[in-house]
Image (cartoon, rainbow, N blue to C red; front, side):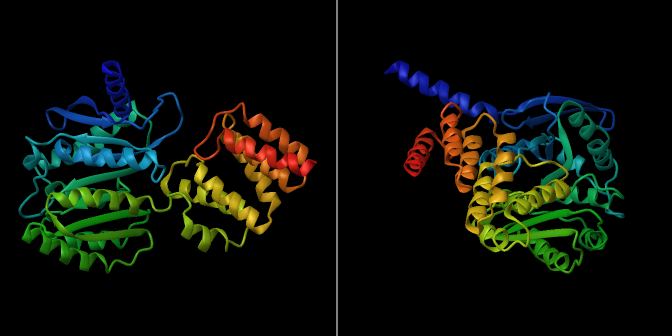
Length: 381
């Protein structure tokens, strides 16, 4: 029994390992010192792989890194969002200086200006030199840091594509300046803001006023989402806002669900396979990185192809699945499905049999392959 509990402990620890943080120190010329970083890489991250990952920079990393990294790890595991590289900056002893802005211009100055430059000139090159980070970058902040991240939107070529502002403690003139800037953005930009009914009163009031202003922005490149949580305070809203923000930012990336299947896939003017290709091409264009083919989307397109009697889509889908899942039962399953659809039962049976030697997938296992074999054998008799 003791050995059994030791085994469970080792198993639990091994499951948790991919989500553990890497701690690094960066020497900064701008800050005249060092900064401690927390870094979480995607599960099964391979530095030799050419694949790139969205980069999420988390200010106030001392307490904000873990909830962000945990959400990323959980949602990417279920393929709701892409795998991401998450970097937190520890600022417990320096946050007041880091987020300092001039009382006349309301822009970063002194130590605040130094930290502003550190992010773009030192931190990003440091991360991109060591890891496969894409140009799709998200920045996350809370109260003072949530105000500070807005300054990066004023750059001629903003370094971030998505901003998560949790209960921002806005500097004077910030909201009016943001409105002007948001109206002329030329790249797809996401902006999430949240407060709560029990948030700090002054902050909540300014955030609600800011929401009214930002809602007037008319720019198809600007994507905005606001939440005012019930039964939450200045700190607990963070745990509720992060998953909502990620859902907003990666809406297009999400797997095909029942609503999309019914309202978009089945009604698409082209073929189901063409819809899949367009969806993935749109994701790459929109986010700047390629989405790995997932089983959920394969099932949806196969179902639509069968429903529409589109044999050609099934044929192209089976080729695509074989390319991306060559070692999985999926490749044999969908090849068998295509051959079964065109009446080539002997070939279908051969493909289903070959699948028994491959690795099971999320939804296709040996039992399913055997059922398909028995079904085909009955048709051949």
